[in-house]
Amino acid sequence: MSKEISLLILQSKKGNQKAQIKLYERFCEAMFFIACRYLKNEEEAKDAMQEAF
Image (cartoon, rainbow, N blue to C red; front, side):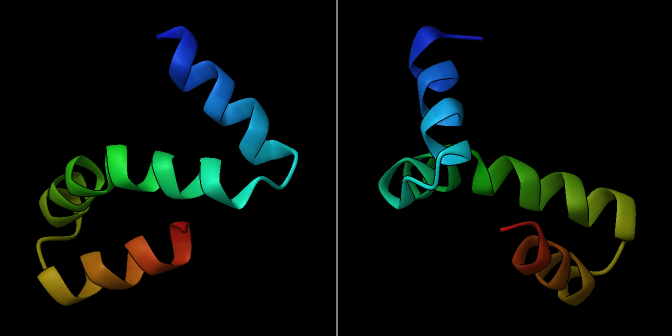
């Protein structure tokens, strides 16, 4: 894991919303594709993404 990602995670844990948004932007597409693969339903994958973030 890169130092940048580690720092964003630490900042997010402390409630930094800008860090949370950066993490979301970095990983949302990959997470959505994984959710689609597991759930085999795009709408359920969207719901899972909303719950995760």
